[in-house]
Image 1 (cartoon, helix red, strand yellow):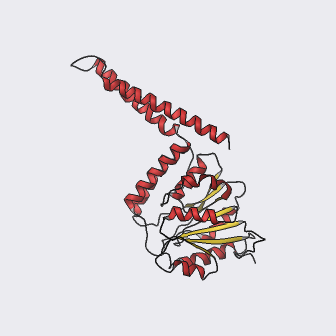
Image 2: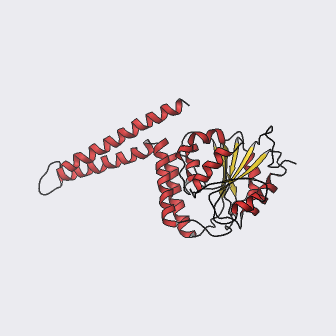
Image 3: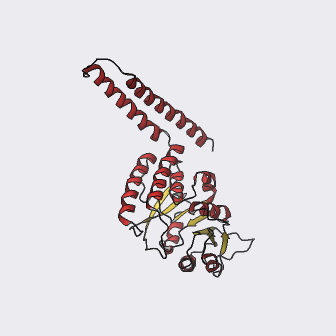
Length: 300
Protein backbone atom coordinates (compact mmCIF):
# COMPACT_ATOMS: atom_id res chain seq x y z
CA UNK A 1 0.00 0.00 0.00
CA UNK A 2 1.23 3.49 -0.85
CA UNK A 3 2.42 5.49 2.14
CA UNK A 4 4.73 8.34 2.98
CA UNK A 5 7.83 6.19 3.63
CA UNK A 6 9.63 6.28 0.28
CA UNK A 7 13.06 5.05 -0.74
CA UNK A 8 15.62 7.40 -2.22
CA UNK A 9 15.19 5.64 -5.58
CA UNK A 10 11.45 6.30 -5.68
CA UNK A 11 10.75 9.97 -4.96
CA UNK A 12 7.24 10.97 -3.91
CA UNK A 13 4.88 12.52 -6.43
CA UNK A 14 3.03 14.47 -3.75
CA UNK A 15 4.37 16.23 -0.66
CA UNK A 16 1.85 17.12 2.04
CA UNK A 17 3.24 19.97 4.13
CA UNK A 18 1.86 20.73 7.60
CA UNK A 19 3.17 23.97 9.14
CA UNK A 20 2.70 23.69 12.90
CA UNK A 21 3.20 25.82 16.00
CA UNK A 22 2.01 24.52 19.38
CA UNK A 23 -0.45 22.04 17.88
CA UNK A 24 0.24 19.02 20.10
CA UNK A 25 -3.50 18.39 20.57
CA UNK A 26 -4.25 18.26 16.84
CA UNK A 27 -1.13 17.22 14.93
CA UNK A 28 -1.53 13.45 15.43
CA UNK A 29 -5.19 13.54 14.38
CA UNK A 30 -4.38 15.59 11.29
CA UNK A 31 -1.60 13.22 10.23
CA UNK A 32 -3.93 10.24 10.70
CA UNK A 33 -6.59 11.97 8.58
CA UNK A 34 -4.10 12.74 5.81
CA UNK A 35 -2.83 9.17 5.76
CA UNK A 36 -6.39 7.83 5.58
CA UNK A 37 -7.23 10.21 2.73
CA UNK A 38 -4.13 9.25 0.72
CA UNK A 39 -4.25 5.50 1.42
CA UNK A 40 -6.05 4.45 -1.76
CA UNK A 41 -5.14 7.27 -4.14
CA UNK A 42 -2.24 5.46 -5.81
CA UNK A 43 0.09 8.43 -5.35
CA UNK A 44 3.55 8.06 -3.87
CA UNK A 45 3.52 10.67 -1.14
CA UNK A 46 5.31 12.04 1.88
CA UNK A 47 4.15 14.06 4.87
CA UNK A 48 6.41 16.89 6.00
CA UNK A 49 5.71 18.61 9.33
CA UNK A 50 7.47 21.95 9.76
CA UNK A 51 7.55 22.71 13.47
CA UNK A 52 8.00 26.46 13.96
CA UNK A 53 9.86 26.17 17.28
CA UNK A 54 6.86 24.96 19.26
CA UNK A 55 7.06 25.14 23.04
CA UNK A 56 4.91 22.04 23.48
CA UNK A 57 5.20 18.44 22.24
CA UNK A 58 4.11 19.12 18.64
CA UNK A 59 7.36 17.86 17.07
CA UNK A 60 7.46 14.76 19.27
CA UNK A 61 3.82 13.85 18.50
CA UNK A 62 4.50 14.22 14.77
CA UNK A 63 7.70 12.15 14.94
CA UNK A 64 5.77 9.36 16.63
CA UNK A 65 3.74 9.05 13.43
CA UNK A 66 6.86 8.29 11.39
CA UNK A 67 6.70 11.38 9.19
CA UNK A 68 9.46 13.86 8.31
CA UNK A 69 9.75 16.58 10.93
CA UNK A 70 11.72 19.76 10.28
CA UNK A 71 12.25 22.09 13.23
CA UNK A 72 12.93 25.82 13.18
CA UNK A 73 15.44 26.94 15.80
CA UNK A 74 13.37 30.11 16.39
CA UNK A 75 9.73 30.98 15.91
CA UNK A 76 9.62 32.59 12.46
CA UNK A 77 5.94 32.60 11.57
CA UNK A 78 3.47 30.54 9.55
CA UNK A 79 4.70 31.89 6.23
CA UNK A 80 8.32 31.05 7.02
CA UNK A 81 7.26 27.51 7.95
CA UNK A 82 5.47 27.17 4.61
CA UNK A 83 8.54 28.38 2.71
CA UNK A 84 10.66 25.82 4.52
CA UNK A 85 8.16 23.11 3.65
CA UNK A 86 8.22 24.06 -0.04
CA UNK A 87 12.01 23.98 -0.15
CA UNK A 88 12.22 20.66 1.69
CA UNK A 89 9.42 18.95 -0.25
CA UNK A 90 10.45 16.29 -2.78
CA UNK A 91 7.17 15.99 -4.69
CA UNK A 92 6.28 18.15 -7.70
CA UNK A 93 2.76 18.62 -6.31
CA UNK A 94 2.65 20.16 -2.85
CA UNK A 95 -0.47 20.03 -0.71
CA UNK A 96 -0.70 22.35 2.28
CA UNK A 97 -3.15 22.44 5.14
CA UNK A 98 -3.05 23.78 8.67
CA UNK A 99 -2.20 21.42 11.51
CA UNK A 100 -5.07 22.58 13.74
CA UNK A 101 -7.79 20.29 12.40
CA UNK A 102 -9.80 23.02 10.66
CA UNK A 103 -9.35 21.73 7.11
CA UNK A 104 -10.84 18.55 5.67
CA UNK A 105 -8.02 16.15 4.83
CA UNK A 106 -10.52 13.95 2.99
CA UNK A 107 -10.73 16.69 0.33
CA UNK A 108 -7.08 16.22 -0.69
CA UNK A 109 -7.75 13.48 -3.31
CA UNK A 110 -10.35 15.77 -4.92
CA UNK A 111 -7.79 18.57 -5.21
CA UNK A 112 -5.27 16.20 -6.77
CA UNK A 113 -7.71 15.16 -9.51
CA UNK A 114 -7.29 18.56 -11.17
CA UNK A 115 -3.56 18.10 -11.85
CA UNK A 116 -1.77 18.57 -14.19
CA UNK A 117 -4.52 20.60 -15.93
CA UNK A 118 -4.38 23.30 -13.23
CA UNK A 119 -1.37 24.88 -11.57
CA UNK A 120 -3.01 25.54 -8.20
CA UNK A 121 -6.18 24.07 -6.67
CA UNK A 122 -7.66 25.58 -3.51
CA UNK A 123 -10.23 24.36 -1.03
CA UNK A 124 -12.94 27.05 -0.89
CA UNK A 125 -14.41 26.92 2.61
CA UNK A 126 -18.18 26.67 2.89
CA UNK A 127 -18.33 28.28 6.35
CA UNK A 128 -16.41 30.52 8.78
CA UNK A 129 -15.50 28.80 12.05
CA UNK A 130 -12.67 30.95 13.40
CA UNK A 131 -12.59 33.22 16.42
CA UNK A 132 -13.97 36.79 16.05
CA UNK A 133 -16.32 35.33 13.45
CA UNK A 134 -18.22 38.55 12.62
CA UNK A 135 -15.05 40.66 12.32
CA UNK A 136 -13.23 38.03 10.28
CA UNK A 137 -16.14 37.53 7.89
CA UNK A 138 -16.57 41.27 7.24
CA UNK A 139 -12.84 41.92 6.83
CA UNK A 140 -12.36 38.91 4.56
CA UNK A 141 -15.31 39.91 2.36
CA UNK A 142 -14.05 43.48 1.96
CA UNK A 143 -10.47 42.46 1.22
CA UNK A 144 -11.61 39.67 -1.12
CA UNK A 145 -13.64 42.20 -3.16
CA UNK A 146 -10.55 44.39 -3.39
CA UNK A 147 -8.45 41.41 -4.49
CA UNK A 148 -11.01 40.45 -7.14
CA UNK A 149 -10.82 43.96 -8.60
CA UNK A 150 -7.04 44.21 -8.44
CA UNK A 151 -6.42 40.73 -9.85
CA UNK A 152 -9.30 40.82 -12.34
CA UNK A 153 -10.30 37.27 -11.33
CA UNK A 154 -13.17 35.72 -9.37
CA UNK A 155 -11.86 34.44 -6.01
CA UNK A 156 -14.25 32.31 -3.90
CA UNK A 157 -11.81 32.03 -0.96
CA UNK A 158 -8.76 34.28 -0.90
CA UNK A 159 -6.94 33.06 2.21
CA UNK A 160 -7.74 29.37 2.39
CA UNK A 161 -5.02 27.30 4.01
CA UNK A 162 -5.93 24.15 2.06
CA UNK A 163 -4.21 24.31 -1.29
CA UNK A 164 -2.32 22.18 -3.77
CA UNK A 165 0.13 23.60 -6.31
CA UNK A 166 3.04 22.80 -8.57
CA UNK A 167 6.29 23.19 -6.68
CA UNK A 168 8.28 24.19 -9.76
CA UNK A 169 6.08 27.27 -10.23
CA UNK A 170 5.91 28.28 -6.57
CA UNK A 171 9.70 28.28 -6.29
CA UNK A 172 9.75 31.35 -8.55
CA UNK A 173 7.57 33.29 -6.09
CA UNK A 174 9.00 32.39 -2.69
CA UNK A 175 10.40 35.92 -2.50
CA UNK A 176 6.89 37.42 -2.24
CA UNK A 177 5.75 35.19 0.62
CA UNK A 178 5.65 36.99 3.99
CA UNK A 179 6.43 35.30 7.30
CA UNK A 180 2.94 35.75 8.76
CA UNK A 181 -0.61 34.49 8.23
CA UNK A 182 -1.08 36.33 4.92
CA UNK A 183 1.34 33.90 3.25
CA UNK A 184 -1.47 31.77 1.78
CA UNK A 185 -3.07 34.90 0.29
CA UNK A 186 0.25 35.72 -1.38
CA UNK A 187 0.41 32.22 -2.85
CA UNK A 188 -3.04 32.58 -4.39
CA UNK A 189 -2.46 36.07 -5.80
CA UNK A 190 1.02 35.24 -7.15
CA UNK A 191 -0.53 32.54 -9.34
CA UNK A 192 -3.61 34.54 -10.33
CA UNK A 193 -1.81 37.75 -11.27
CA UNK A 194 0.74 35.89 -13.37
CA UNK A 195 -1.73 34.03 -15.54
CA UNK A 196 -1.52 30.56 -14.02
CA UNK A 197 -4.52 28.25 -13.93
CA UNK A 198 -6.20 28.29 -10.51
CA UNK A 199 -9.24 26.24 -9.56
CA UNK A 200 -11.46 26.11 -6.46
CA UNK A 201 -13.16 23.12 -4.86
CA UNK A 202 -15.80 23.57 -2.10
CA UNK A 203 -14.62 22.05 1.15
CA UNK A 204 -15.92 21.92 4.74
CA UNK A 205 -14.26 23.93 7.47
CA UNK A 206 -14.23 22.87 11.13
CA UNK A 207 -13.62 24.55 14.50
CA UNK A 208 -9.92 24.43 15.34
CA UNK A 209 -8.45 22.13 17.95
CA UNK A 210 -6.59 24.15 20.57
CA UNK A 211 -6.10 27.89 20.97
CA UNK A 212 -6.26 30.30 18.01
CA UNK A 213 -3.20 32.41 17.21
CA UNK A 214 -5.13 34.95 15.12
CA UNK A 215 -4.60 38.62 16.08
CA UNK A 216 -7.63 40.52 14.70
CA UNK A 217 -6.11 43.96 14.13
CA UNK A 218 -2.51 43.11 13.23
CA UNK A 219 -3.39 40.13 11.02
CA UNK A 220 -6.22 41.93 9.23
CA UNK A 221 -3.94 44.89 8.49
CA UNK A 222 -1.24 42.53 7.20
CA UNK A 223 -3.86 40.73 5.12
CA UNK A 224 -4.95 44.00 3.44
CA UNK A 225 -1.35 45.13 2.89
CA UNK A 226 -0.53 41.79 1.28
CA UNK A 227 -3.32 42.13 -1.31
CA UNK A 228 -2.18 45.61 -2.33
CA UNK A 229 1.52 44.65 -2.28
CA UNK A 230 1.16 41.53 -4.45
CA UNK A 231 -1.04 43.30 -6.98
CA UNK A 232 1.43 46.21 -7.07
CA UNK A 233 4.19 43.71 -7.89
CA UNK A 234 2.32 41.91 -10.66
CA UNK A 235 -0.61 44.14 -11.76
CA UNK A 236 0.72 47.65 -11.01
CA UNK A 237 -1.57 49.50 -13.41
CA UNK A 238 -4.62 48.29 -11.47
CA UNK A 239 -3.20 50.04 -8.40
CA UNK A 240 -1.62 53.18 -9.86
CA UNK A 241 -4.24 53.70 -12.58
CA UNK A 242 -7.22 54.37 -10.28
CA UNK A 243 -5.04 56.47 -7.96
CA UNK A 244 -3.88 58.58 -10.88
CA UNK A 245 -7.39 59.03 -12.24
CA UNK A 246 -8.60 59.95 -8.76
CA UNK A 247 -6.02 62.68 -8.35
CA UNK A 248 -6.74 64.06 -11.85
CA UNK A 249 -10.50 64.02 -11.22
CA UNK A 250 -10.15 65.88 -7.92
CA UNK A 251 -7.70 68.33 -9.48
CA UNK A 252 -10.00 69.09 -12.43
CA UNK A 253 -13.06 69.46 -10.18
CA UNK A 254 -11.16 71.82 -7.86
CA UNK A 255 -9.84 73.78 -10.83
CA UNK A 256 -13.35 74.29 -12.21
CA UNK A 257 -14.55 75.44 -8.81
CA UNK A 258 -11.64 77.85 -8.36
CA UNK A 259 -12.06 79.36 -11.85
CA UNK A 260 -15.84 79.63 -12.10
CA UNK A 261 -17.36 79.54 -8.63
CA UNK A 262 -14.86 80.79 -6.08
CA UNK A 263 -15.97 84.18 -4.74
CA UNK A 264 -12.59 85.73 -3.93
CA UNK A 265 -10.83 85.26 -7.27
CA UNK A 266 -11.45 83.29 -10.43
CA UNK A 267 -8.10 81.66 -11.16
CA UNK A 268 -6.21 78.39 -10.84
CA UNK A 269 -4.49 77.61 -7.55
CA UNK A 270 -1.14 75.90 -7.11
CA UNK A 271 -2.92 72.98 -5.48
CA UNK A 272 -5.00 72.43 -8.65
CA UNK A 273 -1.87 72.03 -10.75
CA UNK A 274 -0.21 69.81 -8.13
CA UNK A 275 -3.21 67.45 -7.99
CA UNK A 276 -3.46 67.06 -11.76
CA UNK A 277 0.31 66.67 -12.14
CA UNK A 278 0.44 64.08 -9.36
CA UNK A 279 -2.34 62.13 -11.07
CA UNK A 280 -0.53 62.15 -14.41
CA UNK A 281 2.71 61.04 -12.74
CA UNK A 282 0.96 58.19 -10.91
CA UNK A 283 -0.58 57.02 -14.18
CA UNK A 284 2.80 57.19 -15.91
CA UNK A 285 4.43 55.20 -13.09
CA UNK A 286 1.69 52.57 -13.44
CA UNK A 287 2.19 52.30 -17.20
CA UNK A 288 5.96 52.02 -16.86
CA UNK A 289 5.72 49.42 -14.07
CA UNK A 290 3.15 47.44 -16.08
CA UNK A 291 5.50 47.43 -19.08
CA UNK A 292 8.39 46.14 -16.94
CA UNK A 293 6.23 43.39 -15.45
CA UNK A 294 4.99 42.37 -18.92
CA UNK A 295 8.57 42.16 -20.24
CA UNK A 296 9.69 40.00 -17.31
CA UNK A 297 6.66 37.75 -17.69
CA UNK A 298 7.34 37.36 -21.41
CA UNK A 299 10.94 36.42 -20.69
CA UNK A 300 10.02 33.47 -18.47
